[in-house]
Image (cartoon, rainbow over all chains, first blue to last red; front, side):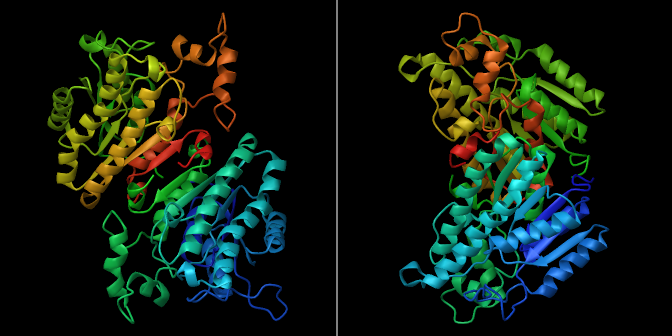
Amino acid sequence: MERFAEKIVMVTGAGRGQGRAHALRFAGEGAHLVLCDLPAARGDAELDPPATVPYELSKPEDLEETARQVQALGRRAVAMGADVRSLEQMSAVVAEAERALGPIDVLVANAGICTSNPLPTMSVQVWQETIDINLTGVFNACRAVIPGMIERGHGGRVVAIASMAGRAGWENIGHYAASKWGVIGLVKSLALEVAPHGITANVICPSSVNTTMMHNDSSYRLFRPDLENPTREDVLPAFASVNVIPVPYVEPEDISDGVLFLASQEAAGITGATLSISAGVNALNI
Amino acid sequence: MSPTRFTGKVALVTGAARGQGRAHALALAAEGADLILCDIGAGEAGTIGTLPYALGSEEGLAETAGQVRALGRDALTCTADVRDSGQVDGAVAAGLERFGQIDVLLANAGIASISRIEDMPDAMWREMIDINLTGVFNSLRAVAPHMAGRGYGRIVATSSIVGRQGSPNIGHYVAAKWGVIGLVKSLAIELADRGVTVNAVAPTSVDTEMIQNEGFWRLFLPDAEQIREQDVRDAYTALNPIPIPWLQAADVSHSVLFLASDEAKFITGEVLPVALGWNARNAS
């Protein structure tokens, strides 16, 4: 079944993890992909690479690999290094992609980082970088894509990735929680503004997902503060203890199922909504 | 998504004689499910005295069953009043005897009536809570042991976008629909380790007899001498950011089937607003 035959889908943070999974699922259902992730570090870059992230950042080779896998599915891919913190760079991606592939039908605003720090002693840089990437980055991607969708008058779909930390408070990731609550407020407001144009905008809220963002020393220490050097085996029960369905995390492809549903024609009546794919964590709040 | 997501599955739908229940049943049948179809029997119809419209009929239930069979699937019809746990348990027992399993429950049966809280008669409050909340409880409890025992189940209850906020003139309906969400979230937690997911949809207005009646139209247009369809359409449209007056029942079926599918295996205790953006103005 091809729900997205010949559609053009843009995915931020497409180098790996959830972004790659979403891109491949769309390609598997017929879409062509616009892929972006962090650019290669350049001496003259106006933006330094994120400096507060304690795990390895996505590399240009990762983005190229996603593009290669999309092409292996017989679909076209435009891959560009671009930093979601820069509206100029996002706009450049949209302009180049629409020239090469055609108008963007679906935006998946997926790029994000997760770092941990208690708020009382959090540095401004740690705060700012998370807000700039996770919240302003979603604004920039929407800001770059939406005017064209409105002008063309054929509707469109936006799916942003927030988090269960966007539905509750969470110790040591207050900046991340604030950014994700912000994404929900942004998308709900956007949904109201673009509803008359046939554009829907929705949010998916995952709990833990099996990606590099979970599997790194910093994340492991967040979940097992009692251990100096926690291993993967040490953290799995701690990951699972957060979820209601007793699994440590869901797979990126489990999130893709929800992304594709919200991007499909079947979800034409759903906008401004949050969909939690979180192994039931949402059962504990609204 | 494949057109055979529900091949080999058996689904029980309450309130299946028409409206959303019928649409969901037919959507499931079209994707391969066999159906156990329940609605209230003729004997009980006279006992719901607070409604501004007529109840689902046994003829309607038979019509739904006929349409399921026309799609090549099997259908068992059961008249059962969801207020009566014995009748609901009986429907589940009959379904299990016929099919041996129930994979999906759609707790869809519900009513809507109108009154300000300060004027609301006891009977109107009680009927609403009995049907729209206790009816869902009776349905969930009836299938839960079977599903938990098998280690598989998908439950989708029909709440409402006013189960996420307040609304005047239907406070009893609002209370029942909030209650459904609390019930769904709690059962989701209780069954999370046994392969059963429990979710709700929260629709905006749906084009069924429940809202397309003189009583509801008067609510929107209290001063109109004659109510024209266009006036009603405008009034309902004003509720929804996506500027159409109401959803068709089949529009809701898409979301119900998504939540009932294996694609949604890690979604539980969730409320999906199928609400033309109404929910963008609240927290849901």
